[in-house]
Image (tube, rainbow, N blue to C red; front, top):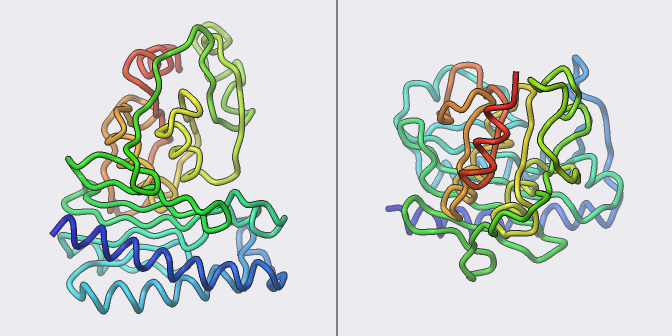
Length: 256
């Protein structure tokens, strides 16, 4: 089932890419979500509608959790769920950057089983299934050995003194990408050494990237070092630390 589930996600991600790139080239309509939840475009909604129809038709017993679909308690009664961000990095999409992605995952009993993060404009498809390794366009992925000064993908506020026991994080070189899923995949690809977010994080931003990172050899937890569990009632995680085991320990042990 894992192989067929992954194949289903890959096919759906490619279809999503066709829809999204059509809107991307045409400057889609943009508006703000209520309660300061950020921007959304007509492309987000079009991709969401296609994915929900396509995926739930193929797996009618799976629950559904997506950034662009109103959440209901129904998914909590299912053993297996799709967890989807139709376009992760909507701000990048609006700005004309290539750093946005379709993030698709299948979760069973709280654990991610299959995952795809697809960046159509970069022609990069990151994939993983539980116990089967991670890949980029079919080529195996592995995190890189820890350098003397690690690089980290994180927003600047995460490095504020208030978060760290000694008033500062360990020596790090900070970088940033808008899409959380893409940040996680870049660490899995060995382009960077860690990904950190300390604020509560939506499951749809994290689920697919978490499995890709884990299968590439990283340790992925919440900000306290606890294992990530998905399909929670609130759909929120307590931040994310993702890195090789040694760097993960350095970051987790120094956080307040």
